Image (cartoon, rainbow, N blue to C red; front, side, top):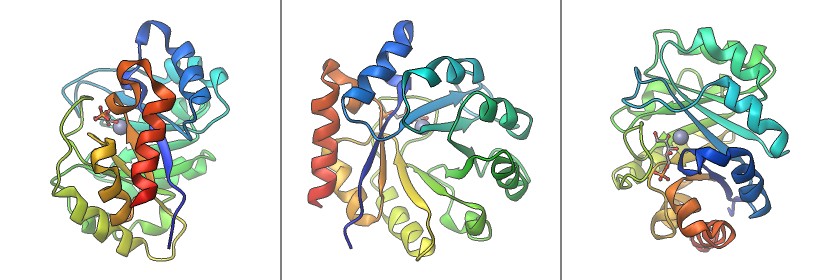
Length: 220
Ligand code: DX5
Ligand code: ZN
């Protein structure tokens, strides 16, 4: 079965001094979603942006803002990210004790709900919340930074997550170290959304970079 492959450049790798312009540029370069990495310096050892930046970039693209919350606790901030204009809000299974409640809160805010699992977390950790999900984000690096190397062991997890999804309308997104060299393996294993930070923004050739990742994935 050939799935449409969606490319979601991560603005963590963009020029923060001109984020609006960068979002317009990756939109025009053919991205499908805009991946927004939110980091709190507590759940991950880095600090990035907050709801105000989501609000600021919202007018610069009609494409879905795919907001990846690497924060803990997460529940107190869901409404702010929803009001700021997020379309998909993804929380980490590891960020707190009540994942099912967090996912219900996101859908209650009228947004699509996603869960992300870090490299050491087995896919079984989310098997009882599948019906609360619109997206599963498999981290292929340890969260916190762009430009890290893809962890090959995650390909097996992608396969297992795809099998777990079955016929449910859930996107399978892979995030971290994705390049044209591994995009094919991710797609063949069952991913349909690929996040790319450094591989999308490198050298300023956004359209070329996005097209190369997509071509590698589609060819798989
Ligand atoms: C890492 C973030 C990723 C990262 C992707 O914690 O969740 O989205 O920015 O950047 P690359 O593609 O360079 O690994
Ligand atoms: Zn991310």
